[in-house]
Length: 417
Ligand code: EPZ
Image 1 (cartoon, helix red, strand yellow):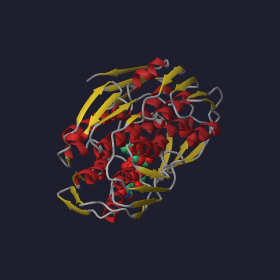
Image 2: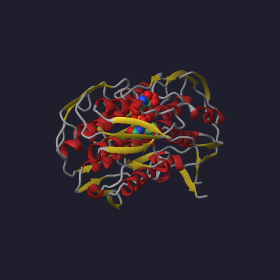
Image 3: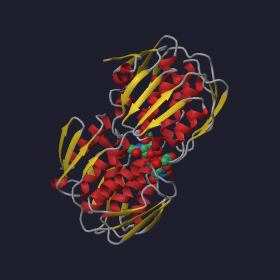
Image 4: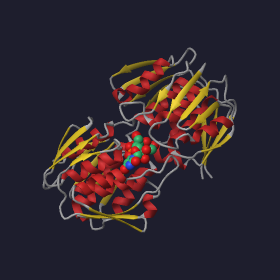
């Protein structure tokens, strides 16, 4: 398993281009299952999770071709309806095949994703919505088996504004008979990106990005040609890195309006942020001020930025309170940061962070995607050389992260095992 060694003390300076968004690309790639014909996608990030998604599409009978960040998928040959355990356990977003397979093949058999490091990750809300649309849902041997002759539009209330739940139901409803309303829907930019893609395919979706999404079912959809939106979490990760190191970094090809909550918190913490169209410059010259954060569904502060922001707070002056409201176990990075000298006390879903003057390098273990990124960030400002183990977690969601940090002046290298 590869490791990454990062030596602290370098100020990050320069410019970095943000890649396409993993969490937009995954549902958009899987929406190709809703039609036959060649769908073409550009600005697709080159990540492990994308590889897994394309492997899944191939195994279902679709024809996939990849040239760098250009991907085409033709699901005309779709002839299987099962997402096997060995793929789903690697990437729980595989559950996003449920809606499309049901709509297209009238059946699906998907391994229950099971939990992951950050929580139980149930899909009960996905299944409740599909059942309301007339699907027969059964659970056997760790798989969900689901059938429907023709899905019917329904008025669905989501107990929680689940991101992939909203995406699954939006895709299923696109080919259902009649109208579907999703209430308390997730409002993330990735939802809007998927709705835009589906509408380009001939779907009739209104209200994506708000809490009420209305979908009028159509009889068939045509292929799409789409460019994936920039990754707001990769962008946010580099914003925090610039603030942490007291540097000045310009992020190119980002969507600043997708980062309002983080930008607001960074400004409160004393960081300078300039927005110029699709670029954003972050600079920190003075001390970092402790700032409280509560993670919330979009447009609130993103849970996927909680670990990274905690690193910034660990060297801020004063005490901050970080509350994780989305996942039940998303403080795994805390024990590793404490080994690097951070002063953090966790109680339930709240972490109290007392800023220290300096972190110290240590060998640390990555556990989940965003916690891994936070350990790299800590290494950028720790005294000495930090070695982050099990960086395959990172490769799932960040395209060549060490090369991008090195291009900004960081002392960082990958150690292939
Ligand atoms: C998406 O996961 C993202 N993944 C996650 O990013 C992100 O952290 C999360 O949304 C929240 O923003 C993708 O888009 C592929 P949820 P998702 O369903 O859809 C509970 C990353 O690092 N819930 O919005 O799985 C659930 O347990 C990943 O890129 C139910 O109880 O998240 C959680 O507590 C990590 N029942 C909360 O809702 C359900 O049926 C939010 O989960 C569904 C969800």
